Image (cartoon, helix red, strand yellow):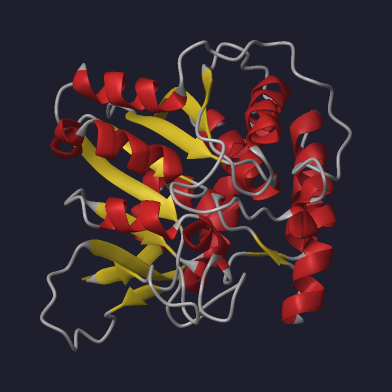
Length: 314
């Protein structure tokens, strides 16, 4: 029996964030969630912290601690994505408002305290949204950086370039200054970019498999992906919507499903043209040292089998 990964999930739910949280909650043998920290991103903070609690209650886990974090990026006005996720961020299923409380502590303080009080290398951060909370914690408490085991993040792109601008992926674009801090902090990074997530498509067959699961979770997930796939199918002409954020949890559960390489990734913060671009030195043409394991490929069949299995346990 291996000891479970201890993680903090930093998130801006979003339907795909919700599925990632559910995948983690469905994997109690391998994953222990110490807390969920909400950040503004897909929708404003008042909705992301609410949605995180809605998802915990959907999975019958009101014991999970949810913390409210930063309501705006470090240096810019907030850009949101209601055009993808709907006005609530969880459009699709009809889910009740949460009863479980928010924690009193601010998410940034929770992140700092958790790492300061834990043995070095014992806790991973899983980031599913803009990196504002994490960067704020690192700026305020640089001493926690060496204690973070790894940051596994959904963000960025190289071959797929951008989804919110021609060159930038949404999570990085919303707060590029935060991303620059995180990528420069010397913490082991695993980056799940659009290059991978655009290969994890919720086809009709895969969504039917969610819908057929016993209980209410599978139906809710199917209704979420039904909603947001309309946007992606129209935009990309694909057979289904990319399921971005659950790849982070999939990587923790089975890294053998993924392939990438250790490269240097820099974040563009100065250019109007390429703001928020993850400048990934995939071909190693610079002498900049590697700072991230940048994932490029996924066994998508293996990933969806794993995801469906975990959702079935809920």
